[in-house]
Image 1 (spheres, rainbow, N blue to C red):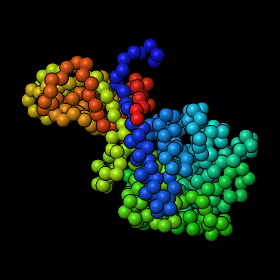
Image 2: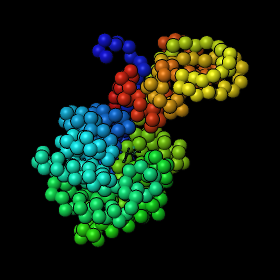
Image 3: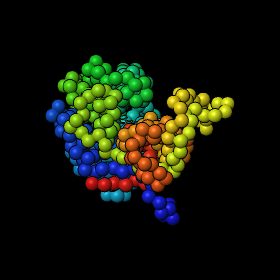
Image 4: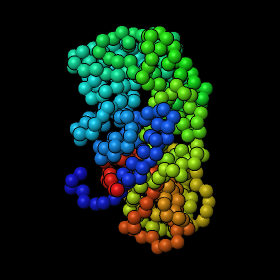
Length: 365
Ligand SMILES: *Cc1c(COP(=O)(O)O)cnc(C)c1O
């Protein structure tokens, strides 16, 4: 997009705030014997941000996409790198050439990775996943997991690093001392079967941090994979009601330019059918109000409730693919085309905006 000269929309990442957050989370985990792998997928693995993340005491970087590992390696950012989406069999060659370890839950894939390691003369660490209720990846049958661990241990080109779980992503299941205690139990069964102790018992992601902070994490859990909690402390304070005052809650800022400011009725005029996405929206009657359009849309942030205006008196009414529609009736100042509005970007908004080719990604300090 070299021919595009405009400045907005943009998403800004404050690297100083991000670094502070990462060090705070890493040190709180370290105090409980837990190492942290920094997950970089929440900002599409941008190497400028990943470089700062890597410097903050994490034991490595992780992401779900091999392309992001390739970009960070090309930028010279040291690993080790963990792949946190269980691999597609079709990407086995990339996983072996790019990653140092991967999550896994299918033995045919682990065998494929082992063969690929032999071909590339490389080694790959394997973290076998247990499904403890969230119903995304992982062995449901824990005896099957123990047998898979024994087989992985016997393969010549991969290393069984340990076991892990993911919670709170698909099934929205809350990590507790009970379900993470069950992971510790799985680790004990594997260790009894293979006759040695496991290096990693990986108790999940950001949603497991509350147990670290309140001291209820089972002792055997010694590793977490954390992205959101470092990038988006606001989610932990808003969603989990935790005191996150030791973190900066505004690492990311989205800025968009105002396109139109007009007074209009609050309900559409005419027969209401479906919007651009096939939904029939509801519009409360609030009379004629000042509204503003900004030049950013669902194509860039997907969910408008993930954008929170920083200016008082401005609220998000909705969005189409390319327009953000704002209520500005209570905004005390003047508002006109060309003004720039700032927004907090919650997890999904930062995820989409940092990956949108229509949004500039700016790093500040
Ligand atoms: C995305 C992901 C993480 C990190 O999640 P955050 O909520 O960003 O901390 C950890 N593990 C797995 C398997 C993931 O997919």
